[in-house]
Length: 173
Image (cartoon, rainbow, N blue to C red; front, side, top):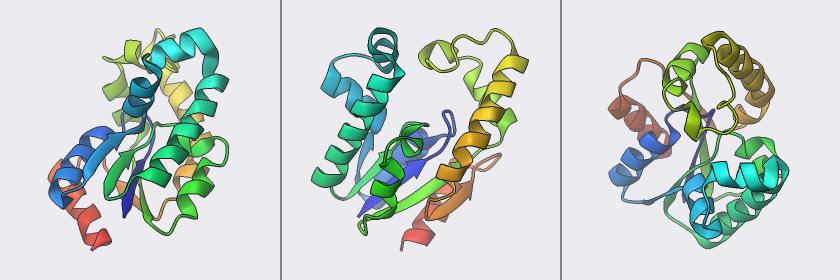
C-alpha cells in the first residue's frame, strides 16, 4: 500500500507523514526531498534556474517513478503536485494508493508560512501578511478541486498530531 498525503504548503504533510510512517511501520518519502536528491539542487534553486514549468515536469516524472517502484510507504506530495499534469489521475487510479487531503484553514497556513517564506519559492515575494493571505486564499480556491479528490479529507486545524495520525490509521485499517 502507498499512503499519499496531499494539501497546501505548511499543512503538515511532512511532519504528519513521518509520524504516520513510524506508526504503521512504513518508509516515509517527501516528494520534494526526493526531487532534491535526484536533481542535486533545492526546489528553490530549480525554480530559480529552470522555472516552474520545468519543475512541474520533473515533479510528475519523479512522482510516477516513486509510485511505480515503491511500496509500503507514506508519500508526502508537494502542495501543487496533485494540480498539474495527470498527477491526480495517477493517484486516484492506482488501487494500491489511499490518499488523504490534510485540510488546513488560511489563517493557520499564513501563521506557519510567515517564518519560513524564504524556503517557499511561491510565497517568498510577499512582504505583508495581507498579500500572503490573499495569495493563499486564491491558490486554495484553485487547488481545492484537486485536493478534494483524495479518498479522505482530514481537518488538521487545532488538532493534535497524534489524533490526526490515529484518524488516518482508523480509516486505513
